[in-house]
Length: 192
Image (cartoon, rainbow, N blue to C red; front, side, top):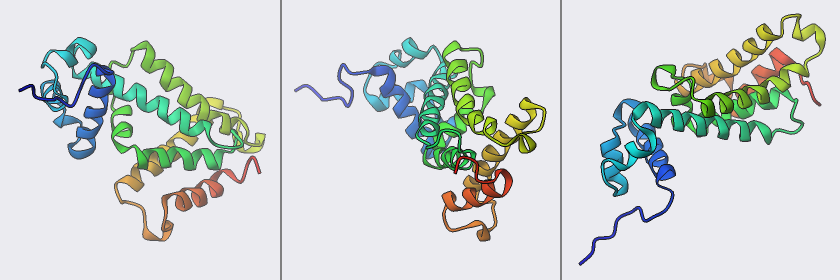
C-alpha cells in the first residue's frame, strides 16, 4: 500500500514557504527548521535545502514574498497617492500577514543583499513614498529622505504597537479606524 503525502509534484518552493509562514505564525521564526518543514510537507529532508540553501535563504524568500504582497496591498489604494489610506493598507497588511511582517524587518534573519529581496523591498517603499510625494510642500519639508522615513516610521511603528497590544483602547475599535484617525491627524486628507 502506497502512503499519500501532502505534497505531490507541485511547486515545492512555494510549499516550503507556505509551511514556514504557518510555523512562524504559530511559534515565531526561531521554530523554523528546514528538516521539520520537509517532514511537514512530506518531502526528503534535503529538498528544502536544495531550493533555499539554509534558513537564511528561506527567510529571505519569505521576506521577498512579504514585500511583494505589501506592494500589492498598497497598490490597491485609490487614489494611489492617498497617504492616509496607504497608511491603513500598510498597517492592515501587518495585521493580516503578521508572520511575513515579522520576518521582513529582521535583517539578522535575511540575506539583505539578495537582488530579489532588494527589488521587492524597494518597490514596497516606492508605493508608500508616492503618498509622501503627494503631500503639500509645506507638509513635506525640504528633505525628501527625512519625510519618507518619518512616514514609514509612523506606519511601521503604529503596526508594531497595534500587534503588540500597546496602543490605548481609546484609539478605536478597529485597526483601520485607529490608523486612519492618526494618519489623518499627521498627514491631513491628501488625495480627497
